[in-house]
Image (cartoon, rainbow, N blue to C red):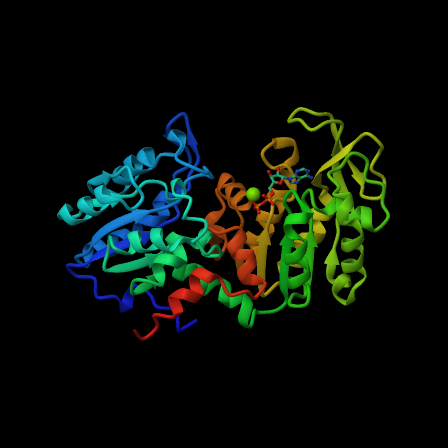
Length: 394
Ligand code: ADP
Ligand code: MG
């Protein structure tokens, strides 16, 4: 990945720099919830400021299809100012006249925060007009939103085609960490997959299976695998339409690398206080649903992880949001912490889980991107990263 242009190659003194950050944080009643992503954006912004640049920042927030007051960037801008320790000017357009004026007149360490990029329909269609308008705001562009790098949007790819561009420190760290898993991972290379839906992750499973030595599967998705193996899974989450395809994957050459649960925690309803107990995976009673992997499975997954040279974990092992179904996810987190190899956790909920357990510092890398990380590990070139390479040596 030496060809990825970074901040090292940009001469930003006295220049205007547009940073595409990932400030897509939860907003509840007009207030920022978890501000982890805002904090993560600061190293790049601070470095640009220290090197004499005027910084403008943009991001998407939620998934509004058009301007929606609930998704304005104002609370994000306020928290950015608080955490960053610099003055912030929030403008009400994505790339309009007010944005241009604000960037022109910004002095010192003042940061201009643009409105939610998704307020413009041209964002997701990578509209040339919007890309031009964004590019007109600055001299350089820095992409630091790894979680959005797999989408060719105006604020990722469009503007990067128009301005000399580089990866921010966050994106750089992501690409370095994930490349280590891609190119020549230390072996055994173990992938732990979980999360809700097999339909989200079947493609990843199929792509990763030939590359890994072992793939442990838990979470809601494992019940479609168990069903494909012919087990009765009661009321567990099963995607019927996927069973045939999953069966073919399990029967394929790589199928023997897949490690499935041998016991599960079943509940008599989908609620935090449902009655629950541990049963063998081949004896899930009718009317009950699997909401976590069981202790024998945790032990088996932990053995697989223990001597791994590299581990990638995506997707919680159970409904970790509820204490009764958290032990599987906790157990896998503990196994990763004990592993001496290179350990990476990726995915919105997986990262939330590991942070909830206070275990972020026990892994080698916490990846901010869910879909982007998975696409990269499949060996696909992310459009946002590919476009930056265009500027290598420029
Ligand atoms: P990530 O964001 O890390 O990629 P996903 O979004 O794929 O993970 O899945 C996370 C969700 O999966 C969590 O909200 C969790 O409650 C849910 N989940 C995990 N195990 C189960 C299960 N057995 N049944 C239903 N939902 C589950
Ligand atoms: Mg998720």
